[in-house]
Structures are given as C-alpha cells and as structure tokens.
Image: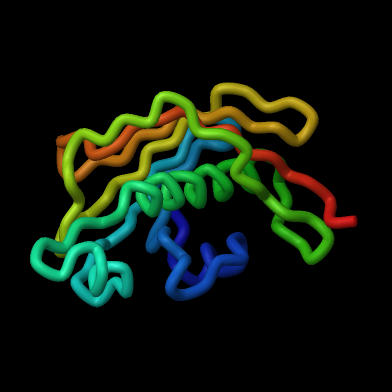
Length: 146
C-alpha cells in the first residue's frame, strides 16, 4: 500500500498530471493495483466534453504508465532522480471498452511481463468496478539524462 505522499516521492508528475491517487497493492517484480479517483474537478473535463464529460483515453493510458513506473521503481529498489527519466516507449493493442466519467474510480492493474537493459514491458488494464475501461501493452524505458 502506498499513499499520495509516498507516490509523490516516487513520481515526478504533479498537478494536473499526477494520475495515481493511491497504490492498493504491489508485488515486487510482478504487479501493482493502483487507484485514480475521477472527479468533476479534473481540468480536462472543461473541454472533453462540456456537455458529456469523459476522461480522455490518452490520460487513462498515462495513468496506467504512471502505475507501471511505480512498479518499475519498486522492482529495481530505486527512486527517480534528476539524472534519470522514465519514458513511454510504446503502446500496443490499446482497446477502449467503456467511457470513464466523473465519480468513477479507475482501478489500474499492471503486470510486469519482462525487463531488460532498462526496457520494461507491461500488460495493463484499467477497470471501473468490474467493467474493463481500457487495456494495452505498455513499453517504458529508463534512461540517463545526458
């Protein structure tokens, strides 16, 4: 379990781009379950869409990538630093199954498939309750800032 204060120590993202509110469970080197509470106060709802607010799909994928980063840092037993960055390197097979709206809780389930030379491959799913909202395979890379 990880609260928002611990998440802020592990991720460089800040408002309005921090998209993980809590880590519910983490199994080192295997998987993470995190939570994003979606509220009407999210800045993206002003324009997406004013008459029917829906969380943008790219932000659902970003929330999954942030959860994946938390899993990667935990797996390596490290924290982000000023001389290292964690990049999105690829998204494969992304499928959006249901809209995410204000009031929803988005459960972020990420499984580490493999890691080698700073490249991580994850199977990721976000659910609202039992309903699948999005699924994808994510590739992320840790790289030193030169």
